[in-house]
Length: 121
Image 1 (cartoon, rainbow, N blue to C red):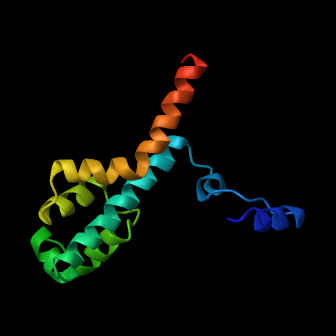
Image 2 (image 1 turned 90 degrees about the vertical axis):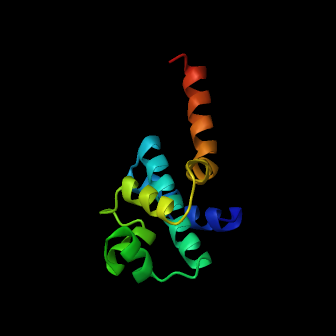
């Protein structure tokens, strides 16, 4: 958000923050949500690159089209295991999955580690 917009909202009595702030998520919870969203986005991107429908992926997973739609939207009912299994069935390697998770969450994790080290914990 631009500084001017932030200032205007603040002057009007609004608080500006992240979704994690609004939901009261811990850093660990925020990282988990970010990982889940990154995995879900990649499932959809890989499926589309392979010109595969949700129904075709569902058959490959032994599931339903509606479940694949939930996978791609990172629905709260979708487990991390199902996200990873979906990616593996689309040809992703363990290294690919590590990159997906690490690229989106790694910076936050490094900051957290640095703070913990500085605090002496």
